[in-house]
Amino acid sequence: MIPTPEDHAEITQLLARYCLTLDHDDIDAWVALFTDDAAYEVYGRTFTGHAGLHRLMTGAPRGLHLGGAPVIDMVDADHATTVQNLLFVPTDGFTRSAVYDDELVRTPAGWRIAARRCRFIVADGLADKPDR
Image (cartoon, rainbow, N blue to C red; front, side, top):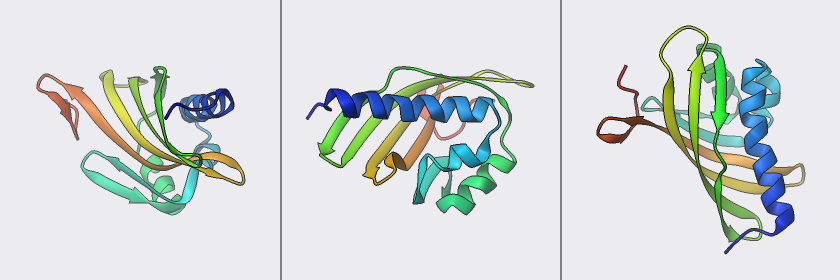
């Protein structure tokens, strides 16, 4: 099921805000893009809820997040999945490329991320951790 033009625009904006809030180091605005009980899988660990997301970002490197256009599939009128690629250019370290797999839900505040999995593009395909 393809999204309506309105849902496509709102979901695309949500994922763009994801990158920009991180680039601006606005962690509170970034956390607000997720549902209260969201789960985020990265580096082989899962961070749950807004408190877990804050904890994740406390130790995360800073840099530029360049998100590609998402592929959006509607599950039903209030649920969607997305796949999006990402290039992360840290301020101090090695550039990483990744793929995000998301579960989104429509809330009274608009579309929010309910689950996100980050897998890194490595020599053998996709992995929970980058090569370096």
